[in-house]
Image 1 (cartoon, rainbow, N blue to C red):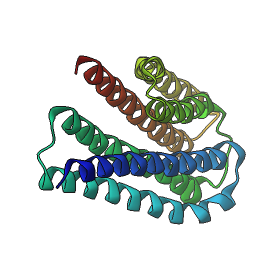
Image 2 (tube, rainbow, N blue to C red; image 1 turned 30 degrees about the vertical axis):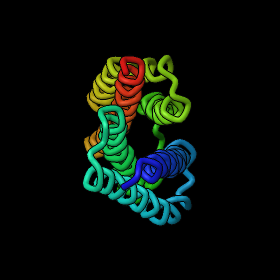
Image 3 (cartoon, helix red, strand yellow; image 1 turned 180 degrees about the vertical axis):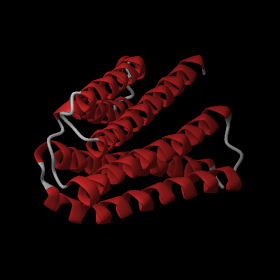
Image 4 (cartoon, helix red, strand yellow; image 1 turned 135 degrees about the horizontal axis):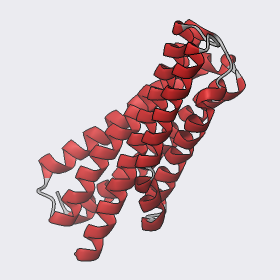
Length: 212
């Protein structure tokens, strides 16, 4: 495969990854509106958007395999292709957890007071946006802030669990309500961790660019 075609396909891979990131961000934004504002009608539109996310992930994965098979990439190209594969998996995982959150609410809660987990939910959604921005803008400083947030997210999750257990002991909530909220909070925590991963892939890629 001529180098010009190879460069063209690398640019296509980058565009597909950006489009996938946009699909993911839209999906998580809708999940947040379901959780925070009780806009349960949005749940009906999300399966189609989730399917679009899966199709983009499949496109990214196929392009990566295609580039590896048809031409042995030079080191810099190889790094980018591997990063694209890893980012694609993290973006898909974020979408998976977003769908899981709204399915839990739809099947078990309906919409209920989510004050206990609101802070973590907002932080997680914000991190998804920032991690995607760091990739699109090749912004090392922003990516570093995303990565550095991991300990804060873990601490917030622990505080939520402790607070919910205290509310259960005071009989302000029953066991099922506590467990439901902990599971939702755990899903948001996983979303944040995958956003952290994206920030790390961005940092790794930018460092390698400088070295080369």
